[in-house]
Amino acid sequence: MKFLEIDRGWVQPVSNEEMILLQRVRGNDGICAKQQLDEREQEVARQLCHRGVLTRVMREGNIYYGYQEPVKK
Image (spheres, rainbow, N blue to C red):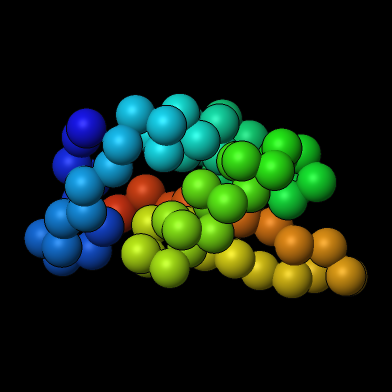
């Protein structure tokens, strides 16, 4: 388990499984289409969206998950 700083000092615990998915999304320039994920990864991505770690966007009928590195101030 690791801790990930989301925004202005707000820290979220992230499991190893979630961290693997985050690294996959980061490796795709911070965006990953839902169709590229298997069923388990889609559920993990949904949970991360609810916790504020990932963002979920619908464009042209397709769902994408995005991650933006926190800005250090």
